[in-house]
Length: 472
Image (cartoon, rainbow, N blue to C red; front, side, top):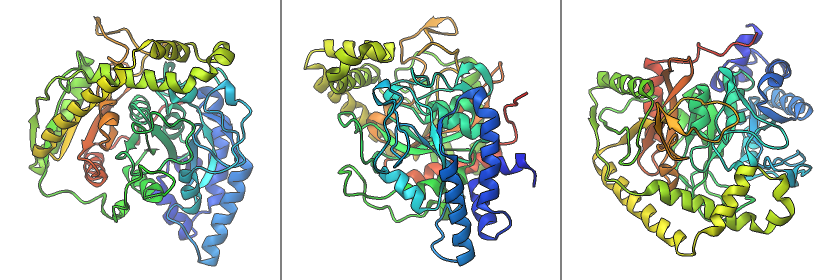
């Protein structure tokens, strides 16, 4: 097995190879470290590396195999951690100058569970300041570039995570998603990313708490099997997070490759409010949806009642960031992302009535989705309305010549942060410029397994892993 093959192995295959002693975790880890040292300077996916920690963790993983005891489900598999998540003893900046020299004093619960599963931690991946936007850059580390085109964004806020996976710099990447922050970069970089149901994976400790009912922790990977493994490792209740869900008593890795006998798929290209979708995205996603017809599943276009969910989400996002960051604004304004400063100042200008009003709209949209899922098992949409756009901007102002709002490029993701449904982005083609296109698969509340099963079925029909970005 050559080094390229090792770097693009699935985590599932790595676990088996390490357990059977066909290859050691130390060999895998060293090979991926070598690739990170070669490629990361080009795209800036990792902002902090922990190679010595990784080498020691790999050594312990191999020792567990030899001793035949305490072998976790991800034993010896390298992973990255988004720089919004605390790793004890490791620099954790949240992408902000306020925390530029911060070293975490404890592991987050997700990191602890990944360690318990036997993972090898390679380092922290880049994120925008406090994960506030859908592109990845900050004043400490700069931008993360899209591996398919170094003049385009990798998406955000888990842009470093997605860019690392598609570049072979680790098979697993932990990400978080408050409005599309796993699914946007998964789409833009051409990897699989899943946001589980709100509460499926606990969050503790948290830096900010006011907007915690929108954010979820999940996985960015090259293979659906690896998403199943990672979710199995990190899901489950935790007393420190009062929103965490009870155990679902399902091992996703044991059932993710089962094809449902009967399924009703609804699809939408507007969710009742989206104005425009890039034409080649719409064409690619429709072709992908039609592939499911071979299973004799019901496939129907659905009409969703129009709501002002976009405006409501924007108000919620801006007001909660404003509330959290107002105490720091006077001291740190000149060292904050100018976009974030603008958001805070805008959020502070809203009247007190704006937040409960947005919550009412949120509830109306949830009820509309509840009705939809009475008739369908999954809802499919494009992941984004555009493919990866240029560096240096937060959002495109137009799509195919038509003006759009700042959320116009991402109308399909944030609604499911508002509702809490599980949702995944899966690669389904490339646009006219050779940039990845993503299809979003949204499941019923609490039903990650069906999302994984449909994703696996599509992966079998239309595998994407052999087409990779090249680095000269």
